[in-house]
Amino acid sequence: MIKTININSKEYTIEFKDQDIKLINEYINITDRIWTMVEDIDFKTNVSLNFTLDGAMKKDVVLPRDKDIASVLHSARLLILPRERTYLPKIKNIILKNIQDKSLEFFLKTLVKNFKILNTLSNINLKFEDIDLIDESIFFEWLNAYEFHGELTKQEKLRIIIDKLGKDYFKSLMIGILITKVDAIFGFATLLKEVITHHSSVINFSDNGTAYKVVT
Image (cartoon, rainbow, N blue to C red; front, top):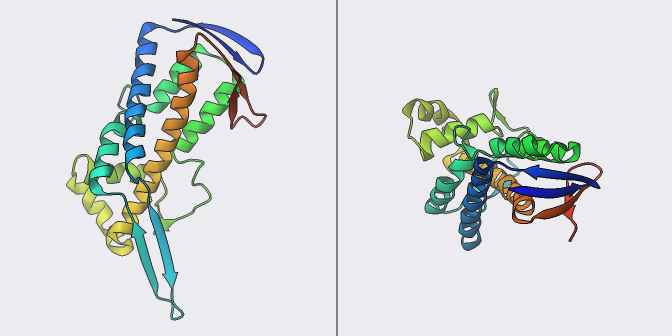
């Protein structure tokens, strides 16, 4: 498949391999399924911390329903697990292999940092002992302990944290990370559709490389 793409006034003619197009379309289709799910449900989390004058704290936590979390994770796992062929950074590499543009590269590297929770929540420093709670590694531990595999060793590792923080509060942190990942997934899919579905595209990235505009 041959595409013409103009990025910040630089024109590229790209011939995507059939296998690359297949994987990109698979990523887009999975993303569309997730979008349909989250449109139909109230997929969000909210935490209110109320302190009294004597220093006591009450946590009020709102979570999505368990069945909605399971449904989103069932599809999203194909995009968020490194071993999957449609893992977001792998699809990013396909795009950059075919389109060697500095503005696009910077935008996608920033998007992947958000996806890996290296940028988006970096202003939040939340630790238990020396364990960073806003971190991709603990997110994967939670997935393997409770959502995907029920691994007993990982459940034991997380139990002391959950006992101290509260089950719902800890889960709200993990759902917050999942929502951040899903936002990055959607953002990437929007760009992919522009690149793939049109014979020619004109895309202008902002000076700081964090946003873009499609010229029609």
